[in-house]
Each structure stands twice: as C-alpha cells, then as structure tokens.
Length: 225
Image 1 (spheres, rainbow, N blue to C red):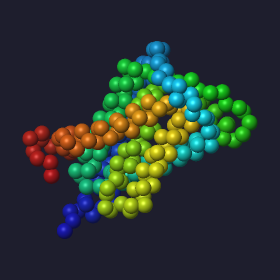
Image 2: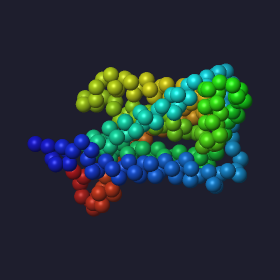
Image 3: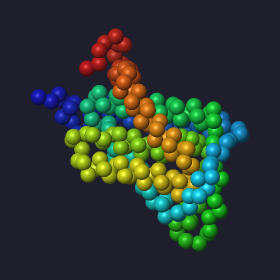
C-alpha cells in the first residue's frame, strides 16, 4: 500500500528542492554579475565556432525550452524521495560549480551584427538586449536541458516517446545556443557534461541522502528513509 505522500500527484518533499534550485540558479547567474561586470572576460571562441552560421529563427527553440524545463523539473520533483534528493542535490551542486566558473573564469563572446529587417532578426536583437554576453561557461541553458533529460531517462513510468522527445529537445537546445550565438561549443559541452557528472556524483556518494536529511531537518546519523 502506498504511503500517503506517495499517493499525491505532487508530494510535499518536492516543493523545497524546486525553490532552492531556482534560488541557486538566480544567485549563480545574476548574483555574480555585480562582482564581475568590471573584470576581464575571456573569449573562448574557436575557429570552428566562427564557422557556425547565425540562424535567427532558432530563437524559438532557445525560448521554447523553458516550457520543457518547467514540465520536466516538475516531473523530477514528483518522483520518489530518493530520486528527488539525488536529482536536486546534483542540480544545486552543478549551479555552485557554475558560480565558481563565473567568478574565477568570466567568459564572453562577440555577437554578430543583426539586420533590423525581419521578425526573427528583431527577436534575436531583443534577446541580445535582454541578456548580456557573460556567464557563458558552462552554459546553464545546456545544463538545464540535460538535467531535463536525466529527469525522465530510463524511467518506466515515463512514456518512451517522451523520453526520446526530452533527449532530442536537449540536443536542439544545444544547437540553438550556437546558432543564436549565445554560446560557443565549449559552453555547450561544459554545461551538458557538468549535469551528467554531478548526477553521477550524487548517485555514487551519499550526497543525495545528506541533502534530503538537511531539507527534512533530520539528524545526520539517522538513516534516510
């Protein structure tokens, strides 16, 4: 028989991890900017990056991925406790690593000149105005998208078509960050790899269990349920 909190569509223990992830993301991405705005930023663009064309309409993918993020992070937060602790412990750890890179190795890139004519050109120009060319390595866009795939990967209760969709959606986001010139190849690899590595660390250590104990205010020596 299922426990009471397991019968709920959205368990109580998934709420706080979501809030903490949003908070960690805000601090890592926006909280570092006041400190690094006047610092030297490094451009890690390669010759291969320069060969990638600008494709303005791919901004649809770049913005549209937010919908996938919302759905898949809610899916992750609604799973069993052990998965929730591991997933969000890995997520917060990844964002702390991002923050360290943004402080220790500030990066930037050279954005192209966008013609004023055309709807997609105007949307891309608007993106450039909204989002400064900094805090690029590792890419949080790619980090989030790979975590979204991890959230549904190899889960029997998740339809296989949606698992495949999440995988291809992540790859599409990777491409869109390059074709909108928001990121370079190193940023993409760094973001995806960081998500996978922290997920593995959380699974091969007691990190997820410790994170769950902290959130539930349990004693360190008490075994997680």
